[in-house]
Image (cartoon, rainbow, N blue to C red; front, top):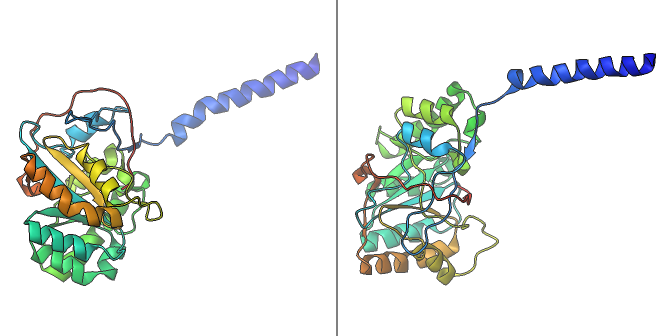
Length: 273
């Protein structure tokens, strides 16, 4: 009996410690931007895990005006895989604007491409210096990550302003959105995406074309990764067909933030970024 009482006392102490620990070690909720994809021109669901509230609260973009057939091309450039020159060639030929979100590695490795992006009128956005999970960083660390990219791009292009940020891998919490907004950034997520970042799982230009075209909807912000051979080969056809369907390609600078957002529909499909 004494042994039982002793074990019971230890169990009570242990359970008491469990009640205390979450309050000490709890971290702010982090989210991976994801959604149920658009089908047949309908809006995607971007209302999962409760993140839509903080996304809209801090003025982040993921969708344009759903009453207008406008599209916004964005590329994530973590590293160069030999395709960005061709992407820029296509954009120049088609007269289509885009935004390129670049990391510190990309800035150091590809200064001439950064210069060309800016020279040809594209937006050079911030994708952080070292591509970390920014929800794990302090505000000071977040600022350092963003300032290093901005300063290096300014040295290359002469453009002092950098207004747009895409959090690495689409991971964020309220602190990331609030801090980056304070530092002068608008966070940019997306409403069209597919698994295009795996360079060992490319499936051909027709696959890329189909994946993008079947998700198109008015006001779409399209996420593509520049490391994808498939995206590069399909880009011209995507632009041509979208225009045949009455879409116009616009710059993020033309995107208004006070637009209607999609209604909740459920479902979650994470996208790497």
